[in-house]
Image (cartoon, rainbow, N blue to C red; front, side, top):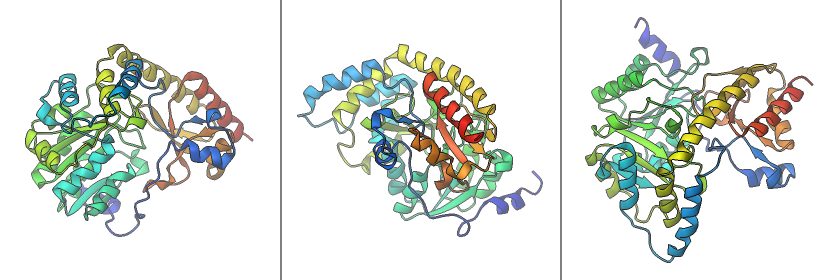
Length: 375
């Protein structure tokens, strides 16, 4: 690729031009209710990209039934859940580790493997950089370009990997929603292996996408780790349950460095039930695909709104009108929360992440946006 090295210099900045890790997240309804003086029940939260159908009914029943067991310690090895996850993916239980949400595992991985330098394409989920910094690692940002649609280029990654010990990638990416095709992801994994860097692929939204996961490849490697969670697709952020998949040697090392009782009884039983609720799984996939298409089409018709390709349960947009700086506040005052992406490195207040919710709720947001953008 001609001039690839020059292009890397253009987007990578180790010490300059990148803000200190800002740990801002969506989904804080209580804070919004107090800020805008609105009852929590009247708020529609588009800032939290969680399954709009909510948790599986079977998971709800299982969590309620598990209340009878809260006088017992949970299984520190999460044996039953790891077996269920292994069956779900067609892998071995020894290739799975569970944690208190995938965020706990994001922090566990650099804490165990102690990388000196961690490469993170940005914009990205803030916890990758926070976890690396907490482990004493130096964060090497690869600033993605808007003119390229914030695409991760495998060849640019190959150059950026020089001298790096670990890489965090989110696929589909949060907040841009862009999917790295499986072929390109395997190419990046090959470059990482050649350079001696451990590649951590956060597939928190991969349940919404068919055929793009590298989870099956991860179990055959000691340098590739896949992260999953029951937060997004399965709609259970409040129970904090996630897991990582890799070769057995890597998983064994992570389990050695993990604190005991890192997941709770309610989360374990709910997750077990959710994995077996195939009706819910199929219903979620069909609903999100249909509503995403309809919602995206409606957003594209709004004046001053530029949309980006999306494959998950949220839509990444750029507000090109002069209303951008105050738009989030005006929506919030109407009880509509969207994710201001200014806290993500490489973005500003013009960029928003909007979760896909149920039809009537999405229509209410479209109506509010139209009124505010044409006022």
